[in-house]
Length: 297
Image (cartoon, helix red, strand yellow):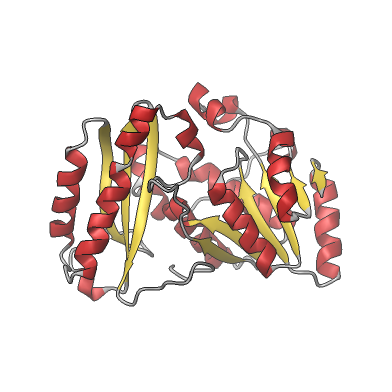
Protein backbone atom coordinates (compact mmCIF):
# COMPACT_ATOMS: atom_id res chain seq x y z
CA UNK A 1 0.00 0.00 0.00
CA UNK A 2 1.47 3.32 -1.10
CA UNK A 3 0.61 6.56 0.68
CA UNK A 4 0.56 9.46 -1.77
CA UNK A 5 0.54 13.07 -0.60
CA UNK A 6 1.25 14.94 -3.84
CA UNK A 7 -1.29 15.64 -6.58
CA UNK A 8 1.31 15.15 -9.32
CA UNK A 9 2.17 11.67 -8.07
CA UNK A 10 -1.48 10.67 -7.77
CA UNK A 11 -2.17 11.91 -11.31
CA UNK A 12 0.78 9.93 -12.64
CA UNK A 13 -0.41 6.74 -10.92
CA UNK A 14 -4.01 7.23 -12.08
CA UNK A 15 -2.90 7.85 -15.68
CA UNK A 16 -0.78 4.69 -15.63
CA UNK A 17 -3.63 2.58 -14.19
CA UNK A 18 -6.06 3.87 -16.81
CA UNK A 19 -3.53 3.17 -19.58
CA UNK A 20 -3.33 -0.39 -18.27
CA UNK A 21 -7.15 -0.54 -18.39
CA UNK A 22 -7.38 -1.17 -14.65
CA UNK A 23 -10.70 -0.27 -13.07
CA UNK A 24 -10.20 2.18 -10.20
CA UNK A 25 -12.51 2.08 -7.19
CA UNK A 26 -12.38 5.30 -5.20
CA UNK A 27 -13.54 5.88 -1.62
CA UNK A 28 -13.36 9.57 -0.60
CA UNK A 29 -13.12 10.11 3.17
CA UNK A 30 -11.93 12.48 5.88
CA UNK A 31 -10.30 9.64 7.83
CA UNK A 32 -11.21 8.66 11.40
CA UNK A 33 -12.49 5.38 10.00
CA UNK A 34 -15.44 3.39 11.32
CA UNK A 35 -17.19 0.30 10.01
CA UNK A 36 -19.25 2.35 7.56
CA UNK A 37 -16.09 3.52 5.78
CA UNK A 38 -14.58 0.04 5.83
CA UNK A 39 -17.71 -1.46 4.27
CA UNK A 40 -17.39 0.99 1.38
CA UNK A 41 -13.74 0.02 0.97
CA UNK A 42 -14.56 -3.70 0.98
CA UNK A 43 -17.17 -3.16 -1.73
CA UNK A 44 -14.60 -1.26 -3.80
CA UNK A 45 -12.17 -4.13 -3.33
CA UNK A 46 -14.82 -6.62 -4.48
CA UNK A 47 -15.73 -4.70 -7.62
CA UNK A 48 -12.51 -3.11 -8.83
CA UNK A 49 -8.96 -3.94 -9.89
CA UNK A 50 -7.42 -1.12 -7.87
CA UNK A 51 -8.69 0.61 -4.71
CA UNK A 52 -7.77 4.19 -3.84
CA UNK A 53 -8.94 5.76 -0.58
CA UNK A 54 -8.56 9.50 -0.14
CA UNK A 55 -8.14 11.11 3.26
CA UNK A 56 -8.60 14.84 2.96
CA UNK A 57 -9.47 17.36 5.66
CA UNK A 58 -9.48 20.97 4.65
CA UNK A 59 -7.80 23.43 7.00
CA UNK A 60 -10.17 24.47 9.84
CA UNK A 61 -9.40 28.15 9.31
CA UNK A 62 -10.53 28.08 5.68
CA UNK A 63 -13.83 26.33 6.35
CA UNK A 64 -14.76 27.80 9.70
CA UNK A 65 -14.68 24.43 11.42
CA UNK A 66 -15.32 24.19 15.12
CA UNK A 67 -13.07 22.56 17.70
CA UNK A 68 -15.53 19.66 17.73
CA UNK A 69 -14.95 19.05 14.00
CA UNK A 70 -11.23 18.79 14.68
CA UNK A 71 -12.00 16.22 17.39
CA UNK A 72 -14.21 14.22 15.04
CA UNK A 73 -11.61 13.95 12.30
CA UNK A 74 -8.18 13.98 13.95
CA UNK A 75 -5.21 13.79 11.62
CA UNK A 76 -3.78 10.35 12.31
CA UNK A 77 -2.63 8.90 9.01
CA UNK A 78 -0.80 5.98 10.62
CA UNK A 79 -3.95 4.88 12.48
CA UNK A 80 -6.06 5.16 9.34
CA UNK A 81 -3.50 3.21 7.30
CA UNK A 82 -3.61 0.41 9.88
CA UNK A 83 -7.37 0.12 9.31
CA UNK A 84 -6.98 -0.09 5.53
CA UNK A 85 -4.01 -2.45 5.24
CA UNK A 86 -5.97 -5.67 6.00
CA UNK A 87 -8.48 -4.81 3.24
CA UNK A 88 -5.73 -4.76 0.63
CA UNK A 89 -6.08 -1.10 -0.34
CA UNK A 90 -3.63 -0.20 -3.08
CA UNK A 91 -3.21 3.54 -2.51
CA UNK A 92 -4.05 6.13 0.12
CA UNK A 93 -4.24 9.64 -1.29
CA UNK A 94 -3.71 12.03 1.63
CA UNK A 95 -2.95 15.49 0.24
CA UNK A 96 -2.54 18.64 2.32
CA UNK A 97 -5.04 21.49 1.86
CA UNK A 98 -2.44 23.45 -0.11
CA UNK A 99 -2.10 20.58 -2.58
CA UNK A 100 -5.82 20.66 -3.36
CA UNK A 101 -6.24 24.41 -2.99
CA UNK A 102 -2.90 25.98 -3.98
CA UNK A 103 -2.31 29.73 -3.56
CA UNK A 104 -4.50 31.66 -5.97
CA UNK A 105 -7.17 28.95 -6.21
CA UNK A 106 -10.42 30.67 -7.22
CA UNK A 107 -12.79 28.14 -8.84
CA UNK A 108 -15.88 26.60 -7.28
CA UNK A 109 -18.52 24.08 -8.32
CA UNK A 110 -22.09 24.37 -7.08
CA UNK A 111 -25.28 22.34 -7.43
CA UNK A 112 -28.01 24.91 -6.72
CA UNK A 113 -31.42 23.83 -5.51
CA UNK A 114 -30.49 20.46 -4.06
CA UNK A 115 -27.78 22.06 -1.93
CA UNK A 116 -30.18 24.47 -0.22
CA UNK A 117 -32.58 21.82 1.09
CA UNK A 118 -32.51 19.73 4.28
CA UNK A 119 -28.90 20.02 5.51
CA UNK A 120 -28.43 23.14 3.39
CA UNK A 121 -31.15 24.97 5.33
CA UNK A 122 -29.54 24.16 8.65
CA UNK A 123 -25.91 24.64 7.57
CA UNK A 124 -25.79 27.18 4.73
CA UNK A 125 -23.34 26.34 1.91
CA UNK A 126 -22.39 23.05 3.58
CA UNK A 127 -22.25 21.36 0.17
CA UNK A 128 -20.44 24.08 -1.78
CA UNK A 129 -17.05 22.93 -0.61
CA UNK A 130 -17.99 19.25 -0.97
CA UNK A 131 -18.93 19.55 -4.65
CA UNK A 132 -15.78 21.50 -5.45
CA UNK A 133 -13.56 18.99 -3.65
CA UNK A 134 -15.25 15.99 -5.25
CA UNK A 135 -14.83 17.47 -8.73
CA UNK A 136 -11.13 18.00 -8.04
CA UNK A 137 -10.66 14.51 -6.59
CA UNK A 138 -12.48 12.84 -9.49
CA UNK A 139 -10.24 14.69 -11.95
CA UNK A 140 -7.09 13.64 -10.08
CA UNK A 141 -7.94 10.00 -9.30
CA UNK A 142 -9.95 9.22 -12.47
CA UNK A 143 -12.05 6.45 -10.90
CA UNK A 144 -14.45 4.20 -12.73
CA UNK A 145 -16.52 3.80 -9.56
CA UNK A 146 -16.81 6.05 -6.49
CA UNK A 147 -18.23 4.49 -3.33
CA UNK A 148 -20.35 6.69 -1.07
CA UNK A 149 -22.39 5.93 2.03
CA UNK A 150 -26.18 6.17 2.25
CA UNK A 151 -25.92 7.78 5.69
CA UNK A 152 -24.97 11.00 3.88
CA UNK A 153 -27.94 10.60 1.57
CA UNK A 154 -28.33 14.22 0.50
CA UNK A 155 -24.62 14.52 -0.23
CA UNK A 156 -24.81 11.37 -2.35
CA UNK A 157 -27.80 12.71 -4.30
CA UNK A 158 -25.97 15.98 -4.93
CA UNK A 159 -22.79 14.25 -6.11
CA UNK A 160 -24.80 12.03 -8.44
CA UNK A 161 -26.35 15.15 -9.94
CA UNK A 162 -22.90 16.73 -10.23
CA UNK A 163 -21.60 13.69 -12.12
CA UNK A 164 -24.64 13.66 -14.39
CA UNK A 165 -24.62 17.37 -15.18
CA UNK A 166 -20.87 17.60 -15.86
CA UNK A 167 -20.72 14.27 -17.73
CA UNK A 168 -17.99 13.00 -15.43
CA UNK A 169 -16.92 9.45 -16.36
CA UNK A 170 -17.54 7.91 -12.95
CA UNK A 171 -20.36 5.76 -11.58
CA UNK A 172 -21.55 6.44 -8.05
CA UNK A 173 -22.08 3.31 -5.97
CA UNK A 174 -24.24 3.82 -2.89
CA UNK A 175 -23.36 1.53 0.01
CA UNK A 176 -26.11 0.97 2.62
CA UNK A 177 -25.95 2.44 6.10
CA UNK A 178 -23.95 0.33 8.53
CA UNK A 179 -25.39 0.25 12.04
CA UNK A 180 -23.97 -0.78 15.37
CA UNK A 181 -25.82 -3.64 17.12
CA UNK A 182 -27.93 -1.14 19.07
CA UNK A 183 -29.14 0.47 15.83
CA UNK A 184 -27.09 3.65 15.84
CA UNK A 185 -25.78 4.52 12.37
CA UNK A 186 -21.98 4.36 12.25
CA UNK A 187 -20.49 7.85 12.33
CA UNK A 188 -17.26 9.47 13.41
CA UNK A 189 -19.37 11.66 15.70
CA UNK A 190 -20.47 8.68 17.77
CA UNK A 191 -17.14 8.60 19.57
CA UNK A 192 -18.01 11.95 21.17
CA UNK A 193 -21.26 10.68 22.73
CA UNK A 194 -21.42 9.90 26.43
CA UNK A 195 -23.24 6.64 27.36
CA UNK A 196 -26.32 8.68 28.25
CA UNK A 197 -26.17 10.61 24.98
CA UNK A 198 -25.77 7.44 22.98
CA UNK A 199 -28.90 6.05 24.63
CA UNK A 200 -30.77 9.21 23.61
CA UNK A 201 -29.43 9.03 20.06
CA UNK A 202 -31.05 5.64 19.52
CA UNK A 203 -34.39 7.41 19.14
CA UNK A 204 -33.34 8.33 15.58
CA UNK A 205 -33.23 4.74 14.37
CA UNK A 206 -36.39 3.90 16.35
CA UNK A 207 -38.28 6.68 14.59
CA UNK A 208 -37.04 5.48 11.20
CA UNK A 209 -38.21 1.96 11.99
CA UNK A 210 -41.66 3.38 12.73
CA UNK A 211 -41.69 4.94 9.25
CA UNK A 212 -40.64 1.63 7.67
CA UNK A 213 -43.28 -0.34 9.56
CA UNK A 214 -46.07 2.10 8.70
CA UNK A 215 -45.07 2.16 5.03
CA UNK A 216 -44.77 -1.63 4.84
CA UNK A 217 -48.20 -1.80 6.47
CA UNK A 218 -49.72 0.23 3.65
CA UNK A 219 -49.59 3.80 4.95
CA UNK A 220 -49.03 6.20 2.06
CA UNK A 221 -49.64 9.62 3.65
CA UNK A 222 -46.40 11.23 4.78
CA UNK A 223 -48.17 13.50 7.27
CA UNK A 224 -49.43 10.47 9.21
CA UNK A 225 -45.99 8.88 9.19
CA UNK A 226 -44.37 12.11 10.35
CA UNK A 227 -46.93 12.43 13.15
CA UNK A 228 -46.03 9.00 14.54
CA UNK A 229 -42.32 9.63 14.14
CA UNK A 230 -42.59 13.00 15.91
CA UNK A 231 -44.39 11.35 18.81
CA UNK A 232 -41.40 9.01 19.26
CA UNK A 233 -38.81 11.77 18.79
CA UNK A 234 -40.57 14.23 21.11
CA UNK A 235 -40.64 11.58 23.81
CA UNK A 236 -36.83 11.62 24.06
CA UNK A 237 -35.77 14.63 26.18
CA UNK A 238 -32.11 14.18 25.23
CA UNK A 239 -32.81 15.00 21.58
CA UNK A 240 -33.29 18.47 20.09
CA UNK A 241 -34.79 17.88 16.66
CA UNK A 242 -33.42 19.96 13.80
CA UNK A 243 -35.59 18.61 11.01
CA UNK A 244 -37.66 15.62 9.97
CA UNK A 245 -38.55 15.31 6.30
CA UNK A 246 -40.05 12.90 3.80
CA UNK A 247 -38.97 13.71 0.25
CA UNK A 248 -38.38 12.19 -3.13
CA UNK A 249 -34.86 10.93 -3.86
CA UNK A 250 -34.12 13.11 -6.89
CA UNK A 251 -35.18 16.69 -6.15
CA UNK A 252 -35.49 16.33 -2.37
CA UNK A 253 -38.94 17.89 -2.53
CA UNK A 254 -41.54 17.11 0.17
CA UNK A 255 -44.00 14.38 -0.78
CA UNK A 256 -47.44 13.81 0.74
CA UNK A 257 -48.85 10.96 -1.36
CA UNK A 258 -46.20 8.26 -1.14
CA UNK A 259 -48.12 6.03 -3.50
CA UNK A 260 -47.15 8.21 -6.44
CA UNK A 261 -43.38 7.61 -6.35
CA UNK A 262 -41.29 4.46 -6.13
CA UNK A 263 -38.62 5.58 -3.67
CA UNK A 264 -38.89 7.93 -0.72
CA UNK A 265 -36.17 9.37 1.49
CA UNK A 266 -36.98 9.81 5.19
CA UNK A 267 -34.38 12.10 6.80
CA UNK A 268 -33.74 13.13 10.41
CA UNK A 269 -31.23 15.53 11.91
CA UNK A 270 -30.95 16.53 15.55
CA UNK A 271 -28.70 17.43 18.43
CA UNK A 272 -27.81 15.10 21.27
CA UNK A 273 -25.82 17.19 23.68
CA UNK A 274 -23.44 19.21 21.50
CA UNK A 275 -23.37 16.53 18.80
CA UNK A 276 -25.36 16.92 15.61
CA UNK A 277 -26.44 13.55 14.20
CA UNK A 278 -28.15 12.59 10.94
CA UNK A 279 -29.86 9.40 9.87
CA UNK A 280 -32.22 8.24 7.13
CA UNK A 281 -34.00 5.35 5.51
CA UNK A 282 -35.30 4.63 2.03
CA UNK A 283 -38.88 3.49 1.54
CA UNK A 284 -39.58 1.68 -1.71
CA UNK A 285 -42.55 -0.19 -3.06
CA UNK A 286 -40.52 -3.19 -4.17
CA UNK A 287 -38.08 -3.78 -1.33
CA UNK A 288 -34.50 -4.05 -2.51
CA UNK A 289 -32.76 -6.47 -0.19
CA UNK A 290 -29.39 -6.40 -1.93
CA UNK A 291 -26.60 -5.41 0.42
CA UNK A 292 -24.32 -3.77 -2.12
CA UNK A 293 -24.30 -1.42 -5.06
CA UNK A 294 -27.78 -0.09 -4.49
CA UNK A 295 -29.28 1.89 -7.34
CA UNK A 296 -31.57 3.97 -5.16
CA UNK A 297 -31.11 7.30 -6.87
